[in-house]
Length: 326
Image (cartoon, rainbow, N blue to C red; front, side, top):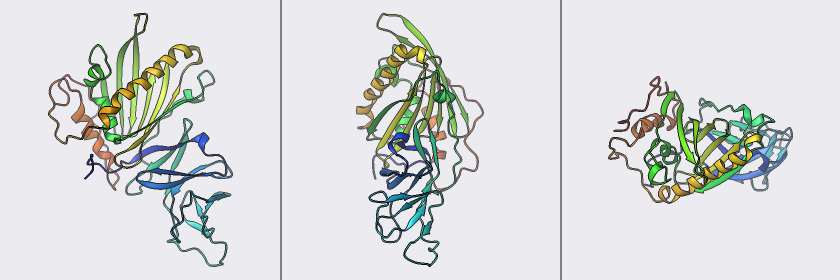
């Protein structure tokens, strides 16, 4: 048994920055506990497949190449379609490729300067929505600003952090314990809150947040009038994650927004020693004021397993009460 009792969750996860995969390029990646091949077809579409050729086991990402819309194995030139995963061409024979000649192909969406792959333990089609944030394509907003981190923890531990309100005071030094309204709509969790930040001059800024979680690894946050950002926490395996943050902000707010981005980046560093050295407590000893931790864990259960949830956990609108999580 490892540190955590969870498999890799189901959901959308970033596997590369868009700029890292040029047209006609193949690059290796390792996520979901598997070796992957990430490539871009000659017409510009990003594709993600499991790396190993079922013929004789060569790694498609090491020496493989793009041939039109297909990825070609470096060993015997078997060619695979990046959408269906099927081998559609074996150049040295006239025989039709076997239906068993197939690699798993992941559904892909390219957005916010990232390439996202859909992971599901039962290989089901995508059913969790992706965020849409028009400001990332708005000329009045900045080009994307990227930050990346790699930590020894799991998606659920990081996601639960947002439900643990008390730690914001004792780990991040906030003057008071923050709160917020929590709402659930199936696979999407929404938190709205107001936080106060004190600048070096002593001026207090009250800022309104809306944070949406699309499963356990993908989040979108809007800090009204200041910035927006997308967070992808991608499982490398069951005990390690690769985080990619993408920020954009109104060009007119560049100076202040840059400071806020730096605040977020500095804050995550404060969590790391705890995340990398804690264990998961199945039945935590919670008390009044701890926040909606149990509520969050009930919602999180639907993102594991080989089945598609028959109906998402959706208790209409749940307002956070002081005793939530007891």
